[in-house]
Image (cartoon, rainbow, N blue to C red):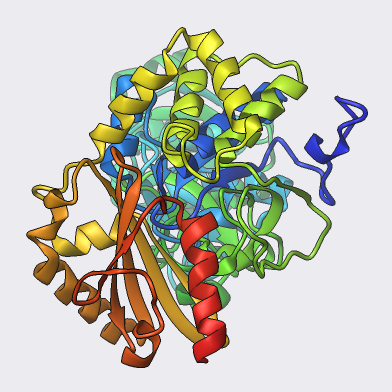
Amino acid sequence: MKDINKGREEDQNITGKTMDNDRKIYVIGHRNPDADSIVSSIAYAEFKRLQGYAHCFPVAAGKINPQTKYILERFNVPEPEFLSDLIPKVSAYMSREPLTIHKDASLWDALELLNSSGHKMLPIVDENGCYNSTLHYNAFAKNVLKKVNPHSRPVIPTSLNLLSETINGELVSSDSPASVFNAQIVVAASDMDSVKAHSSTVPKENCIIMVGNRKEVQDYVIESQYHCLIVTGKHSITKEQAQRAKENGVSVILSPYDTVTTSTLALYSTPVSYMSDYDITPLTEERFIKDVKWMISESASRALPVIDEENRVIGVISQGNLVREPNIDIIMVDHNESSQAIAGIEHYHILEIIDHHKLGNIYTNNPITFINKPVGSTATIVSGLYLSNKLTPSKEIASILLSGILSDTLVLRSATATAEDKEMAEFLSGITGLDITTLGSDIMYSSSAVAGKSALDIISMDMKKYDYNGKGYSVSQIEVASFNEIQKRKDEISEAMAALRSKEDLLFAALMITDITDLDSLLLIIGDHDFIKEVHYPKFDNNTFIMKGVVSRKKQLMPYLIDLLKKSL
């Protein structure tokens, strides 16, 4: 990609893989996302779209918390799409905008389309685009053999319109040309007596008689009121015959081909739905690839149609699709550790990482843009990218970016807040006209109430899981206006933390309760007794410790816990 801001290469969109605008790019934060994670994904996706990546979208990897909902609703910004995981699904591999054909089209048209496209199968649809069946060469071969059995007269479902179109004929006279009937063809190649004897065994309403320029046969067909007369070899009929055919309800088609060619082509005039496969089960785009691989490999054409919830055909997936890369690329924001990333991310190309946390263990196959800065908020980094690339965020985007900075830095009072956070906050305040102190107070109080939430919801709102030397542990954080909001529910919350620890075999589960008014925290910790006794903060009560002036999980609590782990393990 071209250098759009020389001299600041750390902020450039330089990747080891060229972004293709025909592919989707998901900008996604960590599991259990906070406001910074969500607003950064929304704002950075908009930043990429301004750079020309039209198919770039924000995605939420977890439930959006009340504070984030408040921010998005206040500034009329839609919530990003929620994805529970990125385990490969049909949607990431299928070919979209598939070739389809209407079920009433002729077999000839369908085979021509199948052949010219190079595809191995063709979904058959109704007038609403809903799936009907599938045409593939195996189904065609199987069904056509039933029609050319030398031991029985072929019955060809067709209509006069389809018949005349397939043989490139001229429909001179017709009765109900669009109605499908079970045609039986008699070729008048013998003497008159044989023609009469042969045709008399076929019901007149189904009988099609083909003949060249033999006027006596033509007159016999018209007078006997057979369903259809096909005159072959570029021959015609007289005006009198045409008038008589109309009076008798006999349809007449003039074919430009000889009788042999005309009779052969007639077979292909049948509606394609009569020659297709109804045993194929289409897939939905939400099916996991691991569950459908065998279905694709065992299908006759090694390909299957894909339908939506309303049974409309939206794509096709084949074995060839499965060996390609999925049609989704990833930009990670506000995290860089696989343990915090959405499940299944390892199956996709990571194009960029925009983060402000310590380096983790994420692995990529190619060089990527990796912007990691020691600032208080990922929203600060995203704001700086707008500024350095001479792009002005909309008022809505600027408002949520400012909110993200204030949320993640406790209104610029956290130990993690830097001069750059304050600079970007002032920059965004200038765009939006929002007062930093007033907005910060609104945001903090929007998430302080815990009433109505279950204990599990409280510890899950902003939970991060870590690993140290094979020992797993979790650290959650909630913000309250007063410790009294949470203290009366301590026993209930402790039970939920104990259940979580047991279920996931954690060394400990911790909850950091931050008072946004006094900027102090309590640490509730449930876990291994030998580990907990190493905590030297003053005790508030059993398993709860007072942390004066500690408000940052990342910069203050986590280094302390890691030191304890080093000493105790």
